[in-house]
Image (cartoon, rainbow, N blue to C red; front, side, top):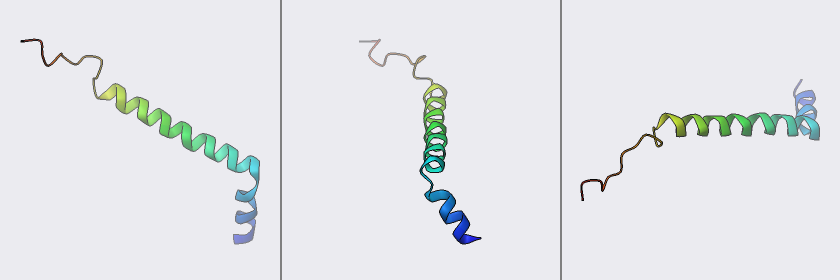
Length: 49
């Protein structure tokens, strides 16, 4: 069973698909965290000066 999994993940197309899904997930998580932090609606800190 271990050899089959090792051969499966050494396949270039499988690694490409896995990496694409992995990095897409990271990209979407970063977009979510950016929108969640409320950067667009922040107030300007020096407005009173």
